[in-house]
Image 1: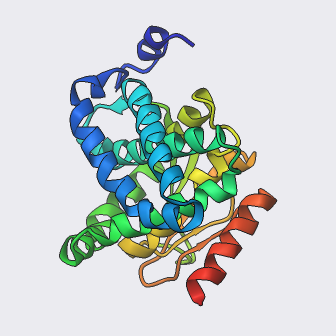
Image 2: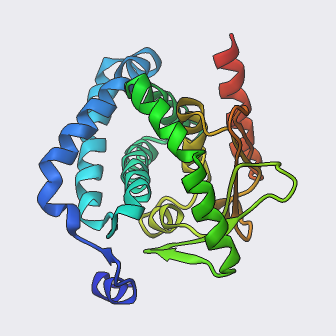
Amino acid sequence: MATNEKADQMPDQLIGYYSSRKEKLLKDFDRTFALMNESLITRYGEQFASILQRETRQEYEKLIPEVPYIKGGRARMLNSFLLITAQELAVYKAMKKHGKLPGEVWELCHQALRLRVAEIPLWKRWLLKQLMFSSLVKKIMARRSKQQQATHFGDFEIEYLVSEEGNFDVGVNYLQCGNFRFAVEHGGEAFAPYICMSDIALSDAMGWGLTRTQTLADGCDYCDFRMKKGAATKISSKTPKVQETIDRIHRAEAE
């Protein structure tokens, strides 16, 4: 689909928005990539790490003008996720050229994301957690769920849920996902189920207590997000190789 056609179909979404912000985004990318550098050198040596840094940066620079920007304050978090997706996709595209498998790529991305979110001040994470589970958010969720109509934000289509039994505090189904669409449209279909696992590090750091059992990238009809204050993160994948990678990371982190 041509860029202009996509923009016409999604009036709340802009393509090309980040072109004028490229230098700032590349500096942010450099900081993120630096978090992976030690692991890269340990695994592959300094020469490969240097080559990958250059090639990944080039891939990200090409992706920046294509990253969708969704207008409106309510989409701020979705926009942040899309930028994370673009960075991780750039790593995958660069490493794929060197014969690296998606699971191998994801282990590096996961570690970098853990380090990146750990840099967010504890007070800020605490405030965001309180907001996520606040009575205001619960009222908004309840109102939207009563409308019985999915909400659209650019390429995202979200259905809001209320738990009658108290099994979760915040619940949504993603009927369409902009992150998944972006990855597929830019050569990352095989890596898309791994990108969904970004929510493990995010949930752990932000205290979301997220349980998720399926995603669109797994071939399911929707992504099921169920968050409960004080609960542990429980995220799994119906794609066997992705689940194997999750298990391998969990074992390594437990050692």
